[in-house]
Length: 157
Image 1 (cartoon, rainbow, N blue to C red):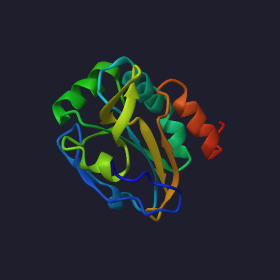
Image 2 (cartoon, helix red, strand yellow):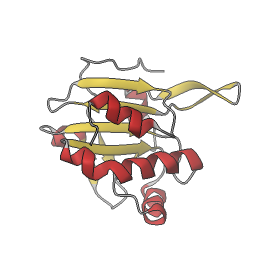
Image 3 (cartoon, rainbow, N blue to C red):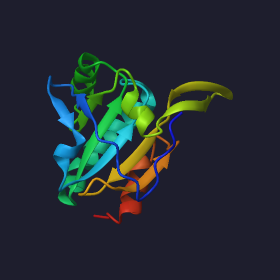
Image 4 (cartoon, rainbow, N blue to C red):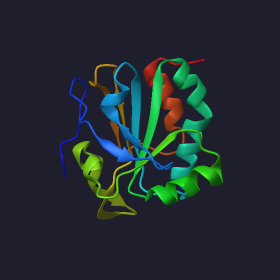
């Protein structure tokens, strides 16, 4: 497993396919703050809750200068179905080979129902306008995470 990121680290750059047939490169978003969150699988209960939560808060987050990128190992086609099914308004990216997740420390050993397994570690990394990590949260809960993140970022509108 890759080392986890900590505040002050340079966020690893990446280019990933999105659910609309395009590509998104993190460094192209310089000048904006970016919330990069990693989740195990589209259209599962916890991941749906978290994605809907981010979508419900996207106008406020963007109003405070944040863009949101949700990354999972799902294919762009599955992500498109996820967006359509749940009316998502955030950017969804496919990391099929899990290389970006590994570079962010968001893939590796984790506990699942008391067993140690290898998989996606639900994580959120906040990157500032210059590409520096300002927050790195690992093993976050799907429910209530966006509200906690808003508090951590000092956004309370």
